[in-house]
Amino acid sequence: MASRIPGIFSENLNDLILKSKVLVVGAGGIGCELLKNLVFTGFENIVIVDMDTIEVSNLNRQFLFQKKHVGQPKAIVARESALRFNPNANIEAIHDSIIGEKYGDAFFRKFDIVMNALDNSAARLYVNRLCVNADVPLIESGTAGYNGQVELIKKGLSECYACMPKPRQKSFASCTIRNTPSEPIHCIVWAKHLFNQLFGEEDEEEDISPDTADPEAAGDAAAESLKADAVARVSTRTWAKDCSYNSAKLLRKLFFEDIKYLLSMTNLWENRNRKRPVPLDLDNVPDEVAGSSKAEVGPGLTNHRLWSVAECVRIFTDAVAGLKKKAEVLKEGDYLVWDKDNKDDMNFVAACANIRMHIFGIPQKTCFDVKAMAGNIVPAIATTNAIVAGQIVIHALRVLEGRLKDCQTVYVRMYPNSKRQVLVPEKYLTKPSEECYICANVNQVLLTVDLEAMTLKALEDQVLKQHLGMSVPDVMDAGSGKIIISDDVDYTETATLAEMGVVDGTILAVDDLSQSDCKMTLTVSHAKPEAGEPSFKLSAKIQKPDRNGVDVLEETSPEKKRKLADDNPTSSKKQKVECNTIEYDDDDDDIIISIP
Image 1 (cartoon, helix red, strand yellow):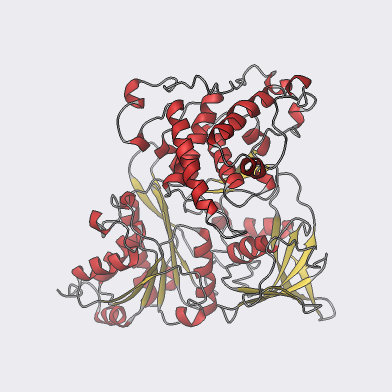
Image 2 (cartoon, one colour):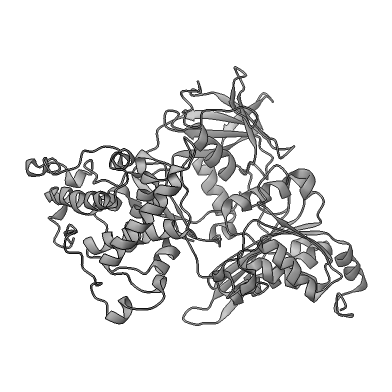
């Protein structure tokens, strides 16, 4: 089969296509469409990287995969399928995470173009940083249902992923999650917190017990009539271990005793519009779902029908037994990590959430619906993926021809009150932000954080990896020379920054071993976040000469940020398209749910 149809492109462009080497990161919905487009366009030197394996749920839109491929690596199968379109193509498939020491500057410099087909911010930020450092054009993309976008990221020419405004966040007060849920999502978040308290990474700020500190409930929580029945306010995991994770005792504590304790907070239930919870009578568990027909509850695919409360109890019991076995073989200090695709993990959350919904008079949800909400799954539309993948290749052809300024960001949007989709291009490329520590080559960043609360593990995972795009960070106190975090030296992950001797004004020297050009200093400022604020803040510190010609550090001010937004109205209208994510903010008042 010919690699291309003669006459479509100029001879010059044909030669550029044949000689170019491209990297595709992601072999999912967009990645499958993109790989097919590249092969048919004539690209013959392609590397595709993906860490996932094929699931049944992928088959409706990731057409390079078939049922027989379930469980196999996406990248490997995608390569085999694409080669059937053009056996002459040289496609290298890598089944691995792109985030890692193996994929540093030298790896990215081998490519003429990098194309992202990812579904998470951490990997996007990592690839973004490496491409900007290596000065390799990156074509970023994303879809969410009927919406999508494609944009060029090029050092010095356009804004990068770190420059772009992120989605506004919707938050729920933790007291709502613990005391007065009124929506299914409240119960689902509570159930995920419970999983962590019992089997995952234990966090005091994710306590699922009634919140006696809730101002609305003050005064009645310690009712004398309940003192004898109320379970002691101890760690949920400690209590569960003491009772050997007995499912009957867990059910009684979580859905009977804790609910009675909530009812003792009489101030909570003075609002007539708020439903009073009904403690679960474990001797008379209803084998039906309120407001549902027998057909909805009866035979059918287990995950696609509503479970009765009695069925939830049985599923909860089986899930706890399975999770207990897994936890017992873990090494000291290790813990389970909730996975939406693990049967016990998913059944535990779905059963707990539905029992809590029943108790609070909230319409129940199928396990399928709970999985979508708890696992942050955005409905994927094959048509949107195809449109976006086509636009990526169009951008790539323009890049090869040197027409970078013609690569304006393109949005896929729905017409109002219509099922028709429309492509909306921007008029011009948005310039890099002066405040971006990547685009502005800023290597001095101000970290504002509560030193007594942030652990070394949080510093590494949340600050350095998730927000600063690092992979293998080393951290040293620039003043004393003390090693704070190192890949070569074991460190106490649970130690706080304060316990490690970090004080207000400490300068931390940070070096990412996987990126030769990724060195920066973090100037630490100690501050406790206000209620509702994130647990830490990062801001660029830009070198500017003072009146005497001496370089001084200047923190970017909120006023300057507003001015930059006013001067660049296009960027303020942008809204990132990527999978919805439920984030658990370190502040004890809020659970953040990101909604694009």
